[in-house]
Length: 274
Image 1: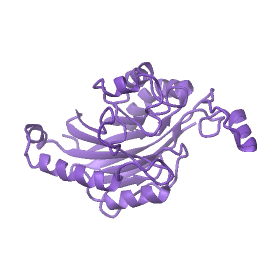
Image 2: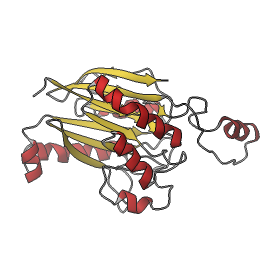
Image 3: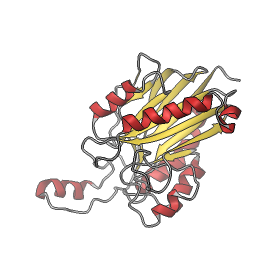
Image 4: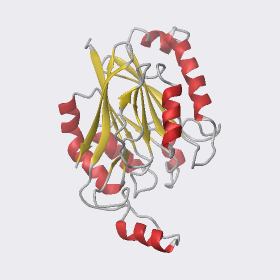
């Protein structure tokens, strides 16, 4: 068994150009970084809003192991069927009961057990269920599984386990608060949603890897992945002009987390390919 494991987490994939960039550059990136698992946020992959089955499968074929979501994951026709199809695709777990799909999964890969939890913030967004309390309850149940209270937990007990959280949120204060609230109980928390990569990556005091926002995998010549002309006109006129994803050469933004066998982060490195 290796002495450490690595997770590559990518920011929001934006439109066809973002998908193409992931298809083109992810295989070599995984090889060069020696990443054991790849998680990407896919809620903006289809035209900038939502996710279609075809686009989801394109990203999986490119090497993404788990796709996470956010507030836009519902915006394409067929989203309910897609989320319920059993793919390694998540929506925020703290939506109220009855929402389609699932908010977490456990994946065994490269001699390790990877737990991926998708949460959504509430500050500046729809006030859904509390992400802090949901995470507490989730981690409490996860600890019971690690102790062997279920058959699946018993099988996974011998494997190193890493808990990765995609926190899809507007507020950086809320992101930092959740990171510190979960510090020492999860392996990494990476923020998504703003499409702007932050430079505050660090290992928190309890051993949790943290970055406020991974950024985006989307067009360089854009405004957070949106066409410049329509976004500027919207700002200048304050009219409800349709926002469309831009096209052209795309950047790849994310972060590589390295973990020891105890589940704690030992290194974090921002990834930014222009």
